[in-house]
Length: 154
Image (cartoon, rainbow, N blue to C red; front, side):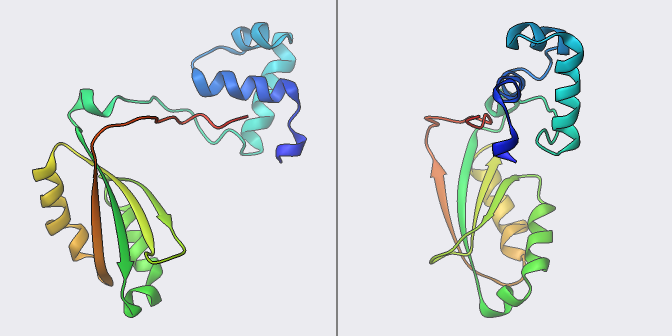
């Protein structure tokens, strides 16, 4: 799909990543197209799944989610055979923002946000550690954020 994107598509995507509330007329003006062709391009990018959705990004600290934890998860042999059960459990935890399957010494990496360390401790003991198949959890507390973006380099 990336090879099928032309310069206009890339400009449109870059603008939408920065501000999804822009109208097709505003985008058209900035990329050098008229409104109708610009609107059609945006619709095509949505239909093709290049644009997956539009969301409002929140500042986690301003809503009281001050702690960010990265948890490395290692499954036991039984846990690996129940991969689906583990992933469904993780998908059900709103505290887990991201979950990645890894190759190497650990099986998964989770990004978790909570109000504070005490809230993470409750999440860990009441939810995460109760998921069947987990052998080991290594929790890493993020002290500060150097870079965080949702924009892909188009």
